[in-house]
Amino acid sequence: MKPIKVGLLGIGTVGSGTFNVLKRNQEEITRRAGRSIQITMVADLNTTRAKELTNGECEVVNDANLVVNNPEIDIVIELIGGYGIAKELVLKAIANGKHVVTANKALLATHGNEIFKAAQEKGVMVAFEAAVAGGIPIIKALREGLTANRIEWAAGIINGTTNFILSEMREKGLDFDVVLKEAQRLGYAEADPTFDIEGIDAAHKATIMSAIAFGIPVQFDKAYVEGITKLQATDIRYAEQLGYRIKLLGITRRTPHGIELRVHPTLIPAKRLIANVEGAMNAVLVQGDAVGATLYYGKGAGSEPTASAVIADLVDITRLATADPEHRVPHLAFQPNAMTDTPILPISEVTTSYYLRMQVADQPGVLADVTRILADSTISIDAMLQKEPAEGETETDIIMLTHQTQEKNVEAAIAKIEALPTVVGQVTKIRLEQLS
Ligand code: NDP
Ligand code: HSE
Image (cartoon, rainbow, N blue to C red; front, side):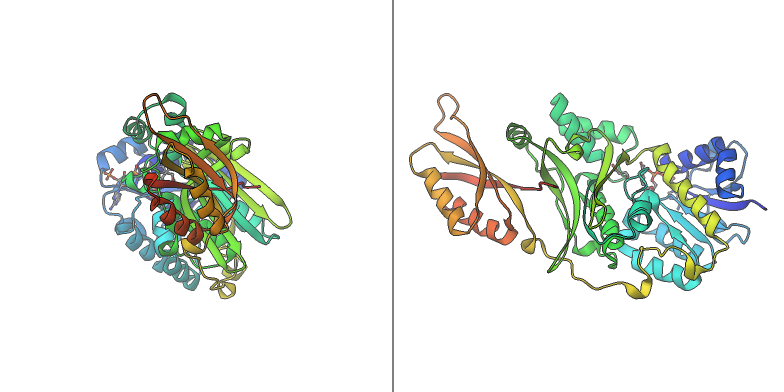
């Protein structure tokens, strides 16, 4: 059978890994795919570096349009990133009848509905295993392996940069900025690291998981997003004393009122497997009604781990290229005409538990005032930690863990607690999930 011809757009971190792994494992991959998969054309702005990386084995151009308009190319791999030129090129490739592989979660979380619709109409595939949790085959698992299940929730450590930062800060006591620079050097961080540390990258991935898990359109604009920049080392320490670790989690959950879609720092019991996922590693827990809890763990970023997912998509497309488009696995797991419009809940309607830290005057009655406010708001306390005031200090920290309650209840209670004359400054609130 004649080789399938691939055009690669962007030969940076993931692009170079894809080129190298495909070349190194060519023989084995051909045995699996049933056809040889060859990158015959590469587009990159830096053609000198691209020529060095590809060593004369394929044509190198600096205009990506030459790739997407080339009738010889069967599959286009988009590894440029962002929503500008990448969107334009992906839509052009689709319009030209080419299948597309992309690792671009930002693009799919924001423009996925338009892209999948265009692909559906043209009868081509858009594959994106690398877009969520890098090398972990979580898209395949959610879309195919768990297809018998009614998915109840998925929660994951889906940003390697922030997990690396949180781990290094906790284990080595290093400063945030130092660890961020190291994550960038290692190729984990996005071109704009704000996407990582402000939780945006994780929210892109959670948005994609949510669509596949529940059969809803991608709706990044409805996601609640909170990063790790405001997280204090004090809270990481107190959480440990209470038996919890703080992780940046992407969570999506089905509730009777709608779907939760949120990313924020989260306390999770230290005894859970997922709480022990350290460094740049990713892990996703998925709860299905039939299978129960399943856990997926691996490298969520980096050149070859991400290339592993990109090439898996290439092989999938190669195997299915001749199949009737109606009988392929749908892009978002559910048939396009069977998607639902279940609403995404605003964060005020989300129900979870909370870690609350407040600085209070060390005098009688303070604790009673705080607990009364919580009781009046029907918020029940699960655990409490009160620190001795430091030598010569008149103020101390009180830390409370609550049972589950709606976010709007806890917000109202916090406003009342902050108004107490004995409470200093603002109450720190971090959400807590048992993940049981
Ligand atoms: P890089 O920045 O390393 O690579 C992007 C490449 O695209 C660069 O070589 C860049 O050239 C080139 N490029 C930029 N504009 C154009 C253009 N108009 N035409 C052709 N080439 C262009 O990014 P990554 O490899 O890290 O990421 C690629 C995608 O994969 C992104 O969507 C990212 O979110 C995603 N991803 C990345 C992971 C990772 O671990 N890095 C993991 C999972 C997903 P130049 O450098 O000269 O600008
Ligand atoms: N910047 C991302 C991360 C890359 O740190 O996880 C993988 O998507």
